Image 1 (cartoon, rainbow, N blue to C red):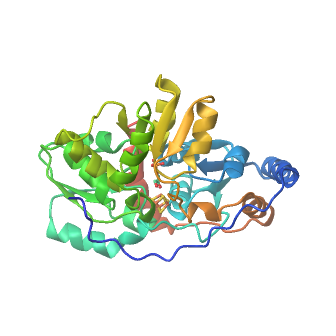
Image 2: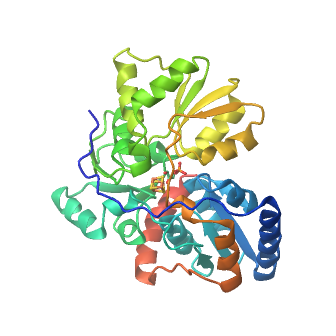
Length: 337
Ligand code: 13P
Ligand code: SF4
């Protein structure tokens, strides 16, 4: 089961190793602080960012949390330490602000699996269906949607669609499978896009780590290839659901804080481990797959953040007509709380 067909080949940026010494990092951070103050800027960083970038940010969070911060901030400039679709979302939600992306190579293999034309054609095939799209989509794709969602609020969004209406869910196949399992009574068509990072985290890798650390709780991102297989295995009685949680990156941070367990197996991009160590010091976090690294996220460096502020570079804009239509879908999601 769960073998998506629309897995497009991706060409990834090369991941550069960090070159800064601790002194240089401290210097860059103080430059960033100065520039931020002078420019009335806020720095938002996703949970998958490099540790030193997370540490220099005003807010670190999941895609939903960062969308909310972007919508609320009184700052004039938003430096988005994340990927391009997230910076576009910030630009859509804050039309009067200047949104800077420190590196234009910060794309997303999942967002690349669907275009606005694809959505229009799909809607023609399923007239009357409500289109719900994950935030990992371009602004043009969002402009074709009825609702936006993130992995943190996907089920709330599905529940907000009237019960008799069919749903087109895009672009993530695994998140779509998660929706189908959690809401089996709903008619849900699922796009077959995948993220190359999460598609690579396999159930057998999770099980092997679990065998080594039987006391550990397992945290699985719903985009994971393994989430679908693990949930199926639970249904078949092959896997104990005890101690296994399916959660967004923000949900995972909450779980490591709140759960009494002291050891967690983390089945998502490994950048989140830095945030987990800060959220729950003294607990142990073991990546299910240490190769689960998003090369797009890692294009953002501390130097890149400093240069974006200093040179006012990589201004992300969305044409006003597209932004207005995309804003409707995002606003419906944000309004659900
Ligand atoms: P979250 O919505 O959980 O932050 O995930 C975003 C993402 O890009 C996952 O790869
Ligand atoms: Fe996109 Fe996957 Fe990277 Fe998330 S981890 S930004 S879905 S490529």
